[in-house]
Structure formats: C-alpha cells, structure tokens
Length: 308
Image (cartoon, rainbow, N blue to C red):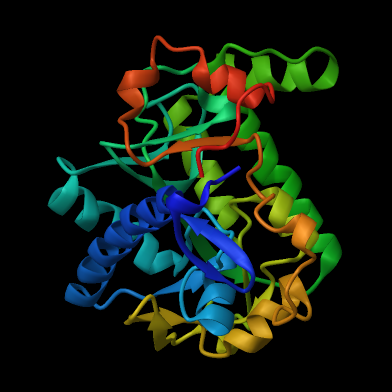
C-alpha cells in the first residue's frame, strides 16, 4: 500500500504514487524523443490502446496505468527503427528482431537504460536491457475475412516459433518438433525472418481497407486491432500530459473495437491490474542493481508489494 506522503495526487478516486509519476516521466521522455524523430522525417504514429484511452478520457495517462503503447504504419515503422537507432542508440536500448536475445522481437521495445521494468518471462536473459520501455506495434494492411486471417496467423506463428526456439533452446516434440527441425536444418535464420516479415505484410496493398497487427498473432486472432484504415490514418493531434501527440483519425471508433464503452471507468478492484505480477517496475534504480538480487523473483511470486 502507498502511504499518504508518497502520493503525487488523486485522480478519478485513484491515488497516484510518486513512483508511478516518475515512471510516467520516463515513458513520456521516450515518447518525446519518438515524436522528434517522427516529425523530422514525416513518419506516422499514434498513441495506442491504453494511451489512446488516456488521451480521450484523462488527457494523459490513465491514473492506474503503467505503460505506453504506440502504433505505426509499416512503412513508418521500418524507417523509424533505422532513424531512431542512429539518433538515440547511446541513450536507449532498441529491441526488435532476431539474434539479440533469447527470443525474437516481433514488435519494438525502446528501453531506458537507467531504470527498471523487468518482464517476468524475460528475466532469465540477463544480457538484455531491462529498463522502463515504450512499445511500438507495426500496423499492416489486412482483410475482413476471418478464415484468411486465421491462415495468416498460423503462418506467422510458425515462423516466429522457429525463430524463438533457435535462440531459446526450447524444443517441441511431435509434428511441431519435426517442422522446427526441418526448418533449422534447411533454412537460414535470415531467410525465416524474411518469410515472417513477408507474411505479416501479405495484404499491404494500395487498395487495402483494413489494418491490423499480424506481427502479434494473439491480438490478431482476437480482432482487437482490426481497424478501418480511414479510422487510423492520417492521425490527428490531441492533448496528452499537457502536450500534443497524435491519436488515430477516429480515436473513438478505434477504441470501441477493443474496449467497447471505454469512457466508463472500470470497477475499483480492476484498476491497475493489467501488469500485476508480470512486470517489476522501479523507476528509481537501474535494472543492473537487480541482476544479483532475488527481489524481482520474490515480487513475481507474490511475496513483495508493488513499488508503484
């Protein structure tokens, strides 16, 4: 529990701690650097998911939220990675693609190097930066045929699974294991990545009506990011934490796809639970201070309170 002298302010009946405010400040700093690169190079991006709700309902972060998500058109996404890495590689860890760590990064994480945001299933990989992050999701053209999207999702998952197993050492048995071993023995990692990328962009055509995130098959199957392109692009600016940042062209229509009545506040007991015991946050210390500590594992096991 947060004591009163640790409260930054109370909003929508929710006490916001100083640690949460510090976390937001780090994420907002990353967002501002993203915005600089996008504006300098005419790239399209938008505040996505919880950040989109925050912009519409609170004109800033949702009081009990702890992350910040961004969407980008595929063309902007590919250019952005190169441009941002060149400009800020000393300031941030840019995590995307294969070969860096024990898993394949199918969406982009930009991590601050001087803080802590440890994702539970990544903590065994001590080589990577575990700082506070902003996530960026590439949006590709899509179709409104559920069966075609399911076929696409299966192919994307196959390539992604093979890539992940090459770096994690995990192996499947049965048919999946045979497929994995066949790929591993006959096809290079670079070529599988190209197949994965091509599959994600299968419906990137000039006459596409829909967009989605096939790079994230779970969300893709659920249809929660299945938007009409005209509702997303071109993004428009709105107020977020006292400054202007882009949201989808029809943010209301986009948010209703995933959240329904997003303007209605969730029950008190459901607020702040989206990353409960999944991510260990400490905006005050570098993740390097936790490399030889049992604190994150004890937090994931439910033995310690959330620092936020």
